[in-house]
Image: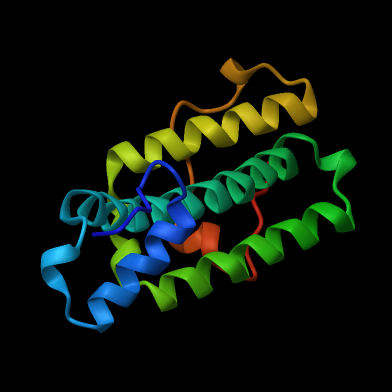
Length: 147
């Protein structure tokens, strides 16, 4: 039996668990923590997508509400986030479900409003309660919101 525990050193524990799997030593596996870690992988991917989407939406809000301050930096951030989101959706197609999940979208939109408020000094309440744009618009390389 191993002396490495999940709580003492998660990296060493993960390496050991992987080796046990490769060696088909299933009786030595820490099943409870393995299941937890596998579930966390999916949650981590969703968080990554949500963070990127919030940054994208926040910049689209800034673009829309501060047209006189529009700049190349905002454009580059919008472009980069779109590319990274599309790459993530290609690599993990099941994440596309997030784009139609009302709760996920609401949380992501709230994060975008928070970001836009912090970076524009425009009150959170001045932004729409829900995203006024379609996901096709948001992810389209050629689309930017107009006033």
